[in-house]
Amino acid sequence: MSAFYPDRVKEVVESKLTSSDPIEKYIATFSIQYLVFKRFSYLLNFSSLLKNLVPLMHEKDWALRKAVFSSLNAIACNIPKCLVTEDKELTSKFYINFKENLKFSEENVQTLDLGQFKHRVDNSLNTRLAAFSLLETLSESCKDIADFDTSLFVDGIKLGLSKFLHSQSLFTFSY
Image 1 (cartoon, helix red, strand yellow):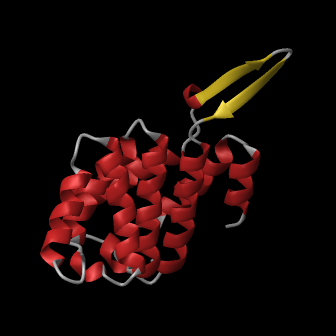
Image 2 (cartoon, helix red, strand yellow):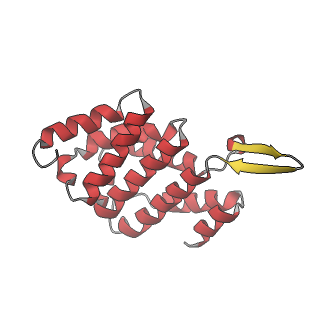
Image 3 (cartoon, helix red, strand yellow):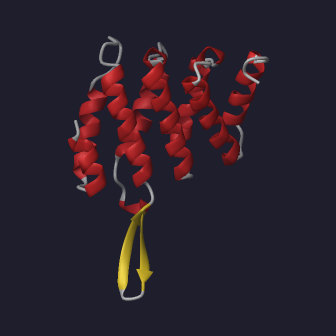
């Protein structure tokens, strides 16, 4: 479809990102990854795409949040200059939402009763690991971009070490 109707691809991806159905949003985020990895990124309008992706960082569905960070990671890895925008309001929303997803919150932890044992499950762990993966990619690919705010990295590392969880802290120590 992308080789024959490039304008239609833009419309479909943007309409699915703004849809009320979480499955359509999920499909759109993976479509973005596919287009970026297959070098069809010229089909996407990154300014409107970022405006639609930033609010999805606060969705209740943890898998969708992880998919959003994976899409942003694909963009940061292949086309890092697209993440730097002149829209200061969008940039500040991105930083605020990004930092909030790096934080550990006790309300996202469930305690499962397994008979005589109790098991704690952190529902947001995979999303935080995807966010730290994006942080690592940004630190590697955007270090030469002058407009990029480096305080994001320092704050992210502080947040990663604030609540000492094994898998998250190992990922944080890699910096």
